[in-house]
Structure formats: C-alpha cells, structure tokens
Image (cartoon, rainbow, N blue to C red; front, side, top):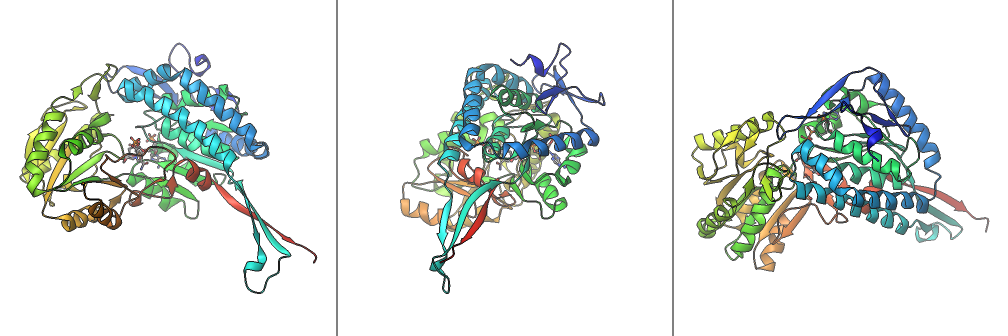
Length: 486
Ligand code: NAP
Ligand code: G3H
C-alpha cells in the first residue's frame, strides 16, 4: 500500500490532487536517522511555484468537499482509522527510525491516532446547530429567528512538529476535513516521511483528490511564503514558541491556532504520596528523552520532603533503559540532532557553574544525552526557566505553597502543571492560581485523553485543541436570519 509513496532510491513524493507527484525542481532534502545517521529517505524541497500549484488545487477541492454530507466524511475517517490500526507496526517502525522515538511509543502514537480519528468522526456527527428566537432580546418579536450552523473556513494549513509527526498531523487533518475544509499539510522536515505515510492512509481511505495535499520543504525556507499565502484561510500550528511568535507576527489578521512550548512544573507538597509522585515525574519528564511539550520540566518541592523525593527520583532514573529506540523498553533515546544536544548541555553547564548539584547523569556523546537530575537549582539558572526539550530535570526547593505558585507563574510559559498532594483543598487553591491551560492533580502533565481541551496560555499558545474544540476552531458559525411575515 505504501509503494506509491517512494521508490528504490528512497525518494519520496508529495500528495497533490490525489496523486503522488514527482518533484518538478529535482531539489531534495535528505532525511537521516538520529539513531545512526543512515539515510531514511529524500523528500522534495518544494519551490514557491510548486506551493502555489498545490494551494490552488486545495482551494478547488474544498469547493466540492464542503458539500459532502458529514456522515460521508465521517465514513472516510472511520476507514482511515482502521487502516492506521492495521498498519501501526509498519508506520511505527518508520517513525522510530526517522525521529528516534522508542518503538512502543511510536506504535502507540499510531494507534492513538486511529482512536483520535474515530472519535473525531463521532464528535462531528453529534454536533448540532441551533435556532435562536429573536424575542428573548428586548424590542424583537418571535417572527425573527436566527438559524445557526457551522461552516468550514476553506483551506487549512496544518504545520506539525517533529516529536509527533503522525499524531499532531492527524489531529489537525481529521477535525479540519470532517468540518468540510481542505488541508495543506506541511510536516516537520525530520518527520516528513512518517507524515507522508499518514497522508497515504487518508488517500487509501477514500479521501477525495485534493482534500489533503502535502508540502515538504524546510520551514526556514518555504514557511513564511506558505503562511502568508492569501489562499490559506486558517493556520493550525504546533511547534516552538519562537516559530509560533514569528508566524503570528507575519500573518496579521489570519485566524490561527498555536500550540507552543512549555515549562511544566510538578509541585510536590509535604503530604504528597512521594512514591506516586516520583513514578509520575520520572515518566513525565523522561519519556522520549523529554522531547514532549508536556514533559515535566521543573520540580518545585517543599524543602521538608525534597531529600526524600530526590532519592526516589534517583532510584527510578537509574533504571531507565537508554540506547536504540528500536529495542523494546528503551526510554532515553538519541535526541533529534546534535544542535538539540548542544542546547541541553549549554543549560547543564550554566546550572553547574552557578552551583546546581548533579544528582545523576553526566554523559553526552553526539546527539545522545544521558538522563540527568539536578538538585538545588536556583532562579538565576537558565534551566529554571528555559525549555530544554531533552532529558534533564531541575529540582527547585521551595518554602511553601505561595512560593510554588509565584515561581510557577513567573515562567513565560503556561501549558500545564501538576500538583501532588493528598489535600484536595490545597490542590484546588493552587490549581485556581496557576496560569496554565490545565492543572493535573496527582498525575504527570500530559495532553490526553484527546477529547479533553488542550491549550497553553502566555507563550505556550493561542486557541484550544482537543477533538470537539479543534473542529470548532476550524469551522465558524454561520447565521441565517428568518424574518417571518407575521
Ligand atoms: P519548530 O522548530 O518550531 O518546528 C515546527 C514546525 O514548524 C515544523 O514543521 C517546521 O518545519 C515548521 N517551521 C519552521 N519555521 C517555519 C516558518 N517560518 N514558517 C512556517 N513553518 C515553519 O518545532 P519542533 O522543533 O519541530 O518541535 C518542538 C517544539 O514544539 C517544542 O518547543 C515543543 O514544546 C513544541 N510543541 C508544542 C506542542 C503543544 O501542543 N503545545 C506539541 C508538540 C511540540 P521544519 O521542520 O522544516 O523546520
Ligand atoms: O509534545 C507535545 C504533545 O502535545 C504532548 O502530548 O502529552 O500525549 O505526550 P503527550
């Protein structure tokens, strides 16, 4: 089924108008595996002229797609979900090689995506319009009624990040298309091959030609041109805060949803179940080597239990398996590239030079960084504030709840936070004060389940994801007002 995508020399194509198109310019980007540098494949580096052609095709396709009944659109999504389940191992293996995600997480990213797509189809069918009688407003009669329905926005540009190339592409594509939009998917360059497999799944499921088109090419080269294109009606972006800010600056008045970086705190109080907190923090901070927007990225622990917590964390971190992501059970994997590892080590060196205590972890080789824990981190250290996107975790000791809230809120980010305590009153007090999209009580920070609202505030984003919320974000109310003659 994936033969059309590629050929013997590993040269991939883009899906345009229902066909896998060869590059017209013959310019390609080589994708090498972060595991061993081997060539995974080559993807076209599309020119502006090619992009124009693709967007024109997306615009045409949307005109017919918008009239397809929701139940028919949903049928295609159900089919796509079934194919993803059938092909999960195959796509997961591609992803493991391309982005060095451990094989278990890679396969479960695919099956989670299948569930996401099915739930999206269910949610779209359950969505209702409304009829609003005019006479509830002073001075109006029952003869005026607003009939309100949701309509698509047009062509949605979906831009996804490297760390979830399948799931964070599909979580834009599925709600957009079920809402009657066509989608132009610009996947992360490192991750684009996995995303092209996803596109093939939608094609095989019967999505009409042009309803999903793909564009590969470096964001730094072609990104500005695409986001500013006048025929793009909505931008759904997930990625770093710096690129998110940039897009928002150059696309004035273009509607958009931005899901950006984070610095999620785990706040641990005196009365917390420390074993439970340690289990959650370690899996929250270190899975996929911390390359998740929702990874636990700092611990704010009350001084009286800090020594105990640090011991429990150390016991768990030492057991994390590192190495080749294709081996079952690996957690600490090579980072996406050397630049990412350089950045992580910059933060480590800054922290050590300012007096942080290294509890565990030291080694870095090329793009591999060992899991590291630092205690006695202070607020003058960069690691207290910056998003490492790597396997390093700072412990900041605090005196009391109010200091925890203050430090948590001083971050430029506001994605999620965790609070570990047995006292529900304290949990609610803290949750109420934290400036984040979601507070997890007695659990690690995480996005799922995927029908929950998922959003960041401050520099963590703009707008809300989550199945129903995403459909709503990519459709708009359209009112037809009936003025009856009575
Ligand atoms: P990134 O460097 O910002 O890239 C994200 C996407 O934007 C990629 O497809 C990239 O393409 C593209 N891009 C780059 N420059 C562009 C431009 N000028 N115009 C349009 N598109 C452009 O982020 P990343 O390194 O892939 O992902 C890691 C970051 O994403 C972290 O900060 C993480 O916290 C954040 N993230 C947030 C969420 C969330 O839901 N809040 C989820 C996942 C990740 P290229 O690959 O070609 O450069
Ligand atoms: O990387 C950002 C993702 O949205 C995080 O999703 O919490 O399921 O890993 P996750």
